[in-house]
Image (cartoon, rainbow, N blue to C red; front, side, top):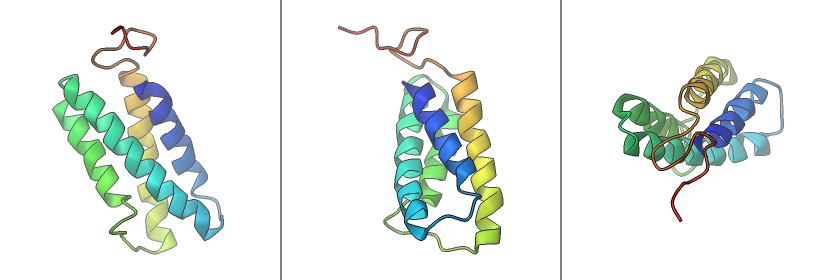
Length: 108
């Protein structure tokens, strides 16, 4: 299940470079924060500590509760780098701990 979550986060971050209403960026913060935590937990349980902590850091930067306020010009490269991180995670780790190759849990 890590792959679809990471792909959705990556696509949402790439779309964020467009000029969109402020509401999109508020929802983006919530979605990317949740995706970072979810994928980070999955990767940590699979033994990928470095990538897990990287995703936790992404979740911290995008957290909607204590938001980081930066200019639009500053957010653009951050969005693209984070999109690349999620894209790499989707490519490199299609199935994580407890999941089969298809990403579906093998537990009953």
